Length: 427
Image (cartoon, rainbow, N blue to C red; front, top):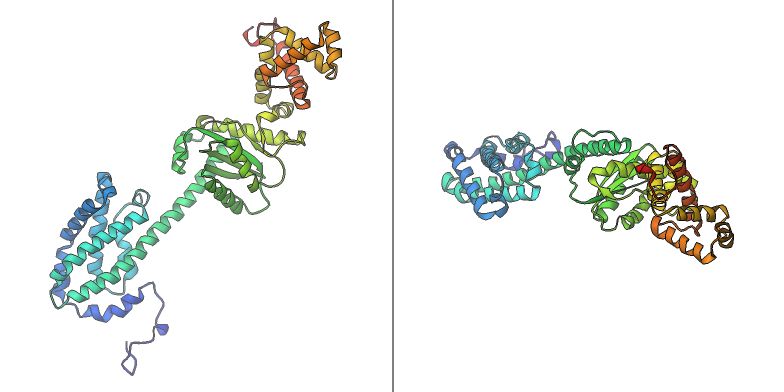
């Protein structure tokens, strides 16, 4: 269609379509191509694709390292690209279909194994091979036209590659979000995940090896998607591999790759809402669920210690967790505080119990035990060395008192067990 003055119609009056502006301009030029030229290019499609792959193998070191199946995908894409160029010469208006067919020749897995940058390099190599051979195939009359159209076609191929990788990224992002939410939910509930956790982490791009930690706290007052995005941004800035989830009113972050998990947790405090923030004990990936549950247990018990630091370790909240009904915390308190004292001799248990019962009075404890005050001091230092709790410190005294209480209750449930040098667990 042309206007009365013989000029091309105003593009603003044309129907909107995805086709390239360049393709629209070149429609008349391509109509002048000889059919023999297009036919010769089509007959050379297989040879040009083979030469393109050979050039890739020569120029690109990473291409030589690809598995055979992935190299075959590249060959298919190269052949489809050259065939689409031939179709482009015949059908100048069908831009979207023709360029889309190029990457449809390869499976979606190619977008995961070959990066966009690498794909651009592959396209460049193919275009350079085509530039070398098309003039001789076209002949003097059509050489300039086919090269000009190759330039326009390569532009559309670049956009097509970007579309393919953008769609793959969107699909992968949606899948990653669902998988991440599933893993976080399973860690919180302590239920089975299906696949082994390491394979789930690998699917999420987790590169860290070694220990993992969990940090939990209240979710910030913002949409969950915004909270997750902010948490991921901070973990990336810290160089951590992380899974993040909003579970009810709680924000849960499980991370790895930190040289100092406590310092990393301190840096993550900013992404949480108001209130306590608890970091679970550090363990390997196989125990990630236990680490997460310990942190959540600490978060539930944290209100019982208003003066707790932020963040606070789940182990530091063992007394509160035990009082809140956490059986694992109670067992750990008995095993790490009470039992080592029992195994070290009844005299230490008697000394610390007496010291606590007298309100931390050194002289009163010495009179009750019929020993010198310096002896009491020595024994209390031994208690701190053995179990890590200082009787003179209010927090340590609180932990020791609860550990003694829970330990005695456990011992009373075992016939013949008593506070002696023989551990109750061995009775």
